[in-house]
Image 1 (cartoon, rainbow, N blue to C red):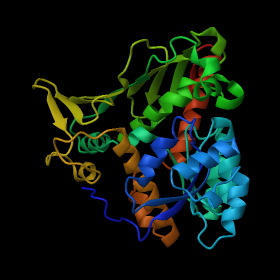
Image 2: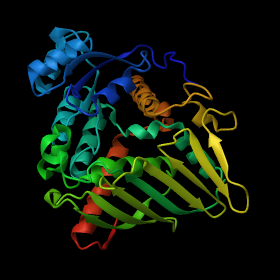
Image 3: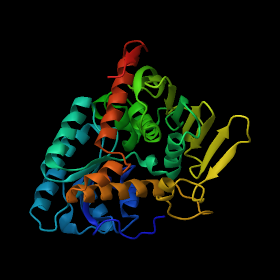
Image 4: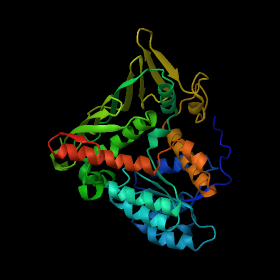
Length: 392
């Protein structure tokens, strides 16, 4: 169980690019990073393209005025001159900026935590992976839902053979908040997401389903997609060529089949993510609207609901427990779990502790690269008429 005691020798000096007053995700990053005040200390920021607004925001959240900067280039240069300069930076900016900021951060000797989808292309992701290896730095990706503990319970039960051979992987991440086009032009946090120049080659595939795809990889680390078929639509026509709805069928290397439905036009939906893994003996199902419960259904027996924090759960699941039984945990705790693991990864990398890095389960550069690869293959399939493509 986590109780706030330090996992590393001291908090890491941390900064943010983006994530200011008008951003959607900045607060999630800060609540995650600062939940364990032994992991990160927010000491600097370039929070906004509007410097005055960003500086006012930074002062209001407690950052010293002389460590608030107009842009990331200035911040990296000025912080490098300080003995107490930043060590880690989080990138919470629109997709089109991720590659250049991440590259600049690594070249400045910083560890990086970046929003998803990581980049536009696998070539960019591979370049950054090699640069991170050269600089001996960590690159983490904020798949913020992946810190929910019961995902590790699913992983453990499948590894232990509790459901038999995996046959079906049924994934969903949908909502209805873009069922109409009102926000596409007026909402600053939405309008760039439907602009291919800023969002990249996809909308909901990259913005939503990369979360769920990574979670499926976390649960099923030894299963790989061999080929897939993607059919995507722009039901709000002005979003074309970017999709607001897509269905993906996947074939895995062990013979299992998978599906992903991702959508932002699922009117009225408030459940968002659903993961069901069907085996030869039993099935497991988890919803992010009920993250403290895991459904375990053995063929021929009454269904069971496994509850977070109970002693019958696997030790790897229990290790991320924070509040105890009867007290619900949610997205803030999930973000806190992945940020704590980012801190532990950075600390291990700095100490040359490769053993810890091998066993630490968190969304790293490989997870980010795989997400980019998955989106690329989905787009390639859809744009060629919803055809089967080998997973490249």
